[in-house]
Image (tube, rainbow, N blue to C red; front, side):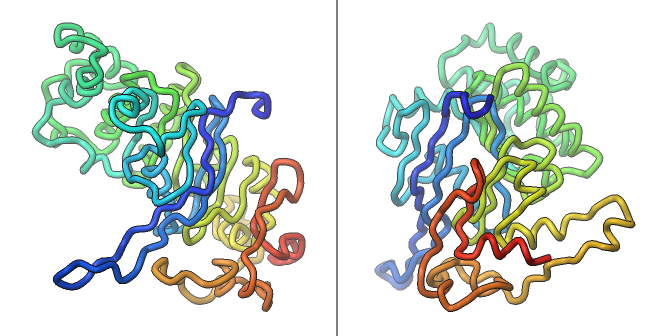
Length: 333
């Protein structure tokens, strides 16, 4: 069914480099390779999980897709329209259909604005409703995210982290967008609240046929909510597959190392499982390794890995990886 669905978002060779400037004349002396040639697509109505270590470029990818950062190069096609070539009023019109839920609910809400002003701002900015109707619309949105509508006149500091994130979710769905980028929306919340927020996101997806790019480093939660999962390392995607295929049959050594670190609640299985321990530190994105980005920590790396960039290829239908020895990777762990 997902293969037949319409492609809502298509990213082609997305690159996002940040210049490093020094000196009185602010000369560019280097670049941070935050995102370095990322390509994938997202079908309408699905949830694409994007996972990886902190600093690998996940959040930068999400922001570059929404044009919050102007990409260095590459293309982002949303409804077959290239956002990287879209400007001004046309881009503003498309922003109604793309929203973001930010990671930190304490930083993403303006402390000087009431809940009514925060949630109603998108409606006002895009002229969806006048001030008289916004109040009723905000009440409906608060009900939708399981918050009391009487909270309209309260300020963000009066709410817990979970409640603040619900306010952020209400703001994101106010314009009934097609795509929502969820940038680690549960990482700043207590574990007891995380499941409630994820269940809310799933309910809203069913109700409004939303499409999510779900960025996270909690692999267990990503498996629960995602349709497909992409694994990112040092600015590049190293593996992409359907959720169950990726978790049951990982082929890239980095993916296998990540999954081996996920706790299993069955103590018998956990005791028999062999961990894949990576050595060394993640290289600097200012000067990434030649060839395969993962070779400096890879347990199966060979000379070829330093000489040639691995080809992005399909191992089995729908399962892609960038590894010279992907089949051999099944032997580790």
